[in-house]
Image (cartoon, rainbow, N blue to C red; front, side):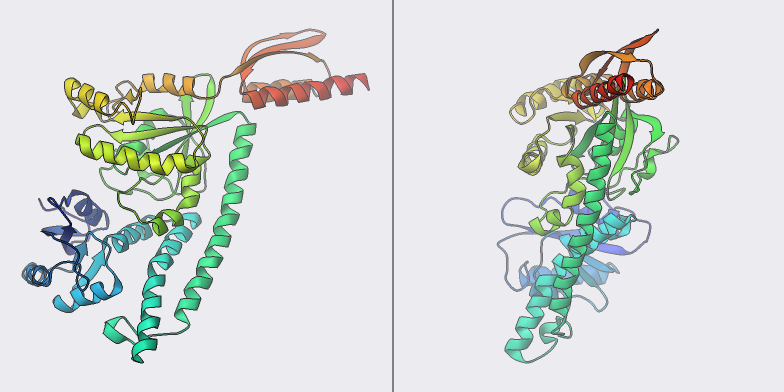
Length: 438
């Protein structure tokens, strides 16, 4: 099936697997997300060839297909070394580019990044990608005394140093940004907000679910905003609608909760790429509750594989409870959905089944979120009537669920709140009493 794009540039997708049959669904979607039109796919089952990745005969077939299809780019759904990239490029018609899986992902990220934090993370990932290639150029140039050997580009002995220095500067700036983000999260917690994070693979329906859970008031994160969060817009069926985090205030009854959506996971990401986006994932790691969104309409083996990968990523640093949400239930027959739940029970015990698109059982998810978040404490305070009392009463109204207030010579207020909010209200009450006695 041909995938259409906005740019009209034509792409040939190629994939090699060691065994079995190659599945090009995801790489075709990624290629379309980058703005290309996928016109042909070529696959091969064989061990990796050191020179080309593919067998040389298959590369010649790819070159012939690219020439016949007016192709602008060959997208390889494998990681190519610098020599393999050069060798494949030498076989292709003049002007046809070679892009491997991770270069393509970086291209998509670069298109989506608008906020400073996202742009820095993309640049960091690009530099991590470029560093071993710069090292390869340096090694070849020193060994063969031929700058630009094998078409790897003109050798510049300072390039490797420049890349490492820039990586160091970006890390320092990202650390400063993350300190500010952490302060913002702590301020929200002190104000009584619960922090809920959405995690999962791209296209699982996270941003649609975010819109279902969200109250009307948007929370300014000073980061990328999902274009489909406008009340009149439809969620887009495309990968990486945004990069970075999007936070909305959720409608969860008595609780004040903020729900944050992040860029979706992708299969087979190398460590250097995941590490480059660590500060984005901190929104997940530092949440009070994580909702792991899974596309229930996918084949069972893919669901299982993605759950395992998500668990490996989340449980490495996350301490908050994780609730699995089987989304897109409207696309799966009830009997089949039951079979999938049973088969995945070890990985996803007691999941919540919803359809974010139709809103089916989203209320059940709200109830589950309420149960999984830290328990509220009930408190009854008797406050002296002073000039500062009403400001304390107002603060409690803003940060807790007030059940009753009685005014007289003293003020009696009963409320429920997070333990840290209760502790702060007691401290404020103590200060009022001390001030009244002074």
